[in-house]
Image (cartoon, rainbow over all chains, first blue to last red; front, side, top):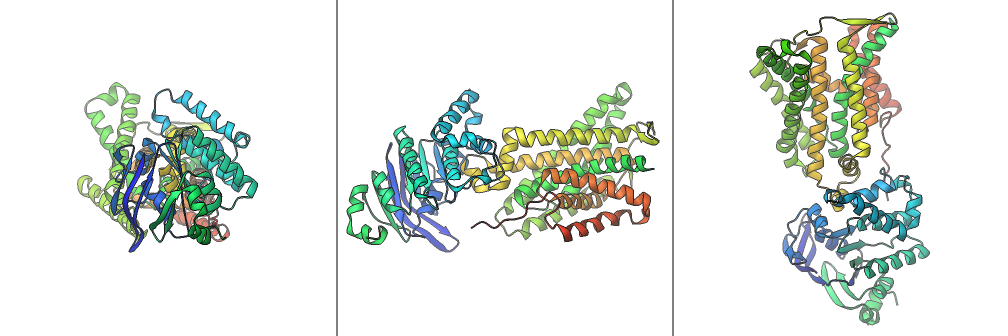
Length: 238
Length: 300
């Protein structure tokens, strides 16, 4: 479904990704783990078109998206929940969700479509319905994460990119979020997940890639990586 | 005297507010002070004279004055919006990722260019805006209100209300607010940033065109340099209200108009232009972010 082939990106003179090759198949949950600065978020930014790769190609369902502007990539079915959630602080919860459905707004029968999308995310996170008229910036961290995920789902993505959804949240909220990720996947959305919380992420994922210094160090089945001595020592703190 | 100054102040304030909105909308989205914005206002005034002259020449004005006026307004707005759109494409978009000073200098360049372009093509002397309503007006609680003033106040109010509705209720309006708050996130939800920026320039320029036309009709005289002082005043109004804030620009504009007209009447009219700036300095001392401004919070 998604294929990255030898991707190189730069921040000024610094090479952030030094040849990333990875693959995500339809229906999978794939996770990227690694230390700070390994290039996990950069990889997601390259996929969604915010950072243009200097070399390499990214293809999504058979077409090359490497040179597309971010909004066209969203229209093709990739939604990105970035690091830090980036809720629009001075838009209401409802308006944040409407912005998530921005690409739906240009389709025919959009009102019906919008309503069913709203119902779907409100069912998943009922607290958002209660907070509908509140400004996004006034929500708690956990609520903001729920809103960020819901906003990304509003465009009916085929592939969902999640960057550190558990960062800074209480354990009970983290398990609620991870459960939601599983539900979303069961409804047919493919997921590429970046996580510091390697243990939870690998448990959830079918496959995982370990990034180090802008390169893929190893990849394999989630369970396999969980049991690998190297991963245990470096990322699981065992 | 009080009522008279109130009406004069509201008239002037409505015009400042319309121009200030263009400054504040562009600043909100690009963090750019568009110094060429005053020139758009000046172009609006000139285009008004040109179109009205044309309609008079072909006899439309004597056939139906309202129709000629409506057409003049619509055409001037369309032309000014096209100018605003083009300026952004040529002078600002190529500098989108440049250091912040570069687009600012480019804006000053566009401003100088437009002034000289109008001076060369229209002449350096004052142009007279046809006096269509004479000094017709009515008495209102001891004050004299001309029809032009009533029209200016009504048109400013209607335009500000419509803009507010547009920004809060429509898909494009919400997208504008989203882009102003976080450009990267806005593109991640599928908003085409360039379209939104173009729309901002088109709307801001259209409002400035209306302001230019109305002032030309109010004062009756136009020259190539009127954009400069009006631009600075409107910019002051935008800063007064809190630059980047739309209600701030509306409020700041009207407040500035009132301050000018009252202080000219009750203190001295010789320093008419100075009062605005005195108030600005005071506001900046007390509340640097402006009356409606958001205090910048550093996020961790």
